[in-house]
Length: 290
Length: 211
Image 1: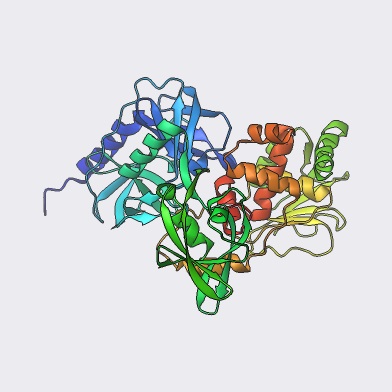
Image 2: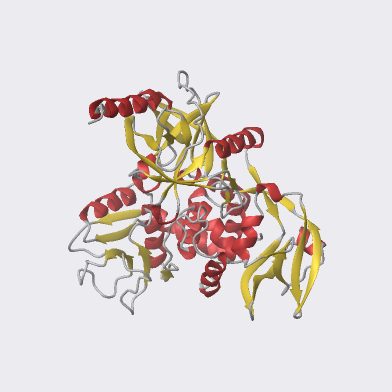
């Protein structure tokens, strides 16, 4: 047999969790549940955007058990990150950034619920390429977890075997645990600290999915008189079927492309009017993403 | 006019007397939590069982015939699509619906509205990627009935989409925060949304919010 010591392994995992615990906080969310948050840097905490109610004052319960009022600096639905600034968070450590992870690497999800420390270990299940969220956020890597972490862990950090942060735990469709990667959070935090919101691309059109024989697209149902779509000559009933030469399957697809980095971009839309397709060039506008 | 009527419903109920809500759920723990939420509101009076009359009842799939047929009811249903008993005025919501949403549905049902969700999963979908073609999702959207929002709800939705919290919505529309919350809750129910972010995403896909 090898000299692997199960107890030493167990203690090592618990030690890593305990070491990160002082960076954690908890707050009340919908359905009388709690979610986790963790110290990012300079006294700012990050958490899961969907757990935070707009305009409500947030009370963070720190790892010490003490409570502190926190201000919501901003939220980024495209990456699922919300940024909080507690009135006082002295002593919360900054967790290090993890190196690249591979499927099968140990992953430890850490959380906090009303002052009590939570930790569960498992492994990284999948590491894929960058992807685009439904709201157009560029997510650096697709990281899925094989970790039995429940709702109270949402917004908490996921650590590697050195205790460094792989990213933040969120739940995708069907409750699947996924990790918002460190680099993605870092960008969202920088933008939120600077502007308090994240931009989204804006066309100024209300859209509805349509199919015309084999073609799929987004039909223009309403127009903002001051929006880029109207300025470029789009009319009600036009069907947007392409974005810079790539097929657009419908509103979902178009919304996905109108993420933060699309604002201000020059784009050529393929538009079907009266059965004939033409190209329409326009500059994508900008609105706060919410 | 819409606005005035909506505001009056809320303020009258609060001013005159509390709405009596009979909680007749098979799930006792849920019943207790709901009762606590209702009791904390200005305008709802939860009753858990027996005698007396109630204005509206909260029932689930296991409640059976515990509630008189004439009483408006809100059904918390675990079944997809939530087909409830026909006839009386009622609202159907997923079992996991937020307590505040259930409260809003109770007010709407008591006021004679019929509220049904879209039978959606209620799950946050923003991070769906790579599984299933986007086209399939758009077909789902295409077949989803476009919910009819009142003019006031449409105004509230537009502000929601700008990221406005309830306080700001109230100020901008010159209504009370209580009323703003009421409209937001009604919008979430009508769109079948799990939360505000989800509501905006659904509204954008259905052409209710400009993209």
